[in-house]
Amino acid sequence: MKKKLLFAICTLFLGIQVNAQTTLSAGDIAIIGYNYDVNPQEMSIVTLVNISAGTTIRITDYGYDENTGTFGTTSVANTAEGSITWTTTSAIPSGTVIKFSITTGAAASVSGLPGTVSLTGWTNTSATTSPAPAGGDNWFIFQGSSPTSVSTFVFGFTNTFATTYNGINQPAGQFLVPGTGIGPNNNNSYLPPSLTLGTTAIALNRDPANGGYHGDDNVYKGTLNGTKASLLSAICTVSNWLTNETTTYDITPGGTNFPGTNPVFVVTIPCSAPTSPIITGSNSICTGGSTSFTASATGTTGTTTYSWTYPNSTTATGATISNVTLAGTYTCVISNGTGCTATATTTLTVNPTVTPTITISSSDADNTICAGTSVTFTASITNGGTTPAYQW
Image (cartoon, rainbow, N blue to C red):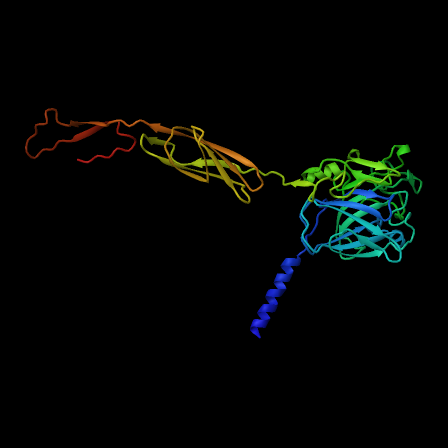
């Protein structure tokens, strides 16, 4: 019975480890393409962090209502709106581009997301109004306990066409103006306060004929290489997007705009260099002697490497170099697990070997004393080094 119980407990913990989901933060996934003028409509996203198997992610075109702090009731009730619940079944590396399509109607479905998927809404049968209408839409990636309950907004996207809403001018490059007064409908949204335009949200809104950026079809065309922060900045910059009112773009991983194999994006880790690099060891030896030097630094992470250069350009690796005999400057480049480096130097002096000489002086001028008296002899050494030893 005890064995069975232990086995069950071990199995439970193993299951928890395997299926532990990634808790996402704002900007961990971004939208990088959307095509309206194709049936079914399609979207591409990129992961900017590693995502473990068992992670549940939600994608929706429900509009956020600033008055309630949640998705608007009009938007949620609209049959042209909906929400995807996607659970990954395998790990997804950072930089992975994923394209998926949404088929609406009585048998609404999603294809292209790696894992298990379920849908809420999008029962409207018109391919021109669902999931996105011709006038553009808003999209959010988030995590939460249900299709309408949000714990963390991850990314926001909007490409609405309208120049006004509720009679209020809607400037290009932003979501609905705060204070517009009414909740969102089926193709617009306020920006949740936990997302930031230019960092974790992109607005390609407003009629281009009126100074806007709207296009039914959209694709990101900026850099594919950088830190998470720099990539988000590029993705959320309007000038890095192409938009078109009638012609779709290739948003497939490996295609024209996202060439190569996944992970298509190269997400680099911000550099955090080691600090306070030092080299310890004796810096002065005599000819024929040797010493050892050891390099160290604080702030090292992951696998730390040490690359030494000797005065004669000889190289070595490892934290410590031994049997060092050559005079001159020694340099060690310390590299931590993020690929960042710090450099330390030290100089070795090799002193020439000299023969010591010694003289003895007496406290008595002629070294002739009477019985019972004493004399003091003092030894004086030349070239005796810093700690000479005397034996009488």
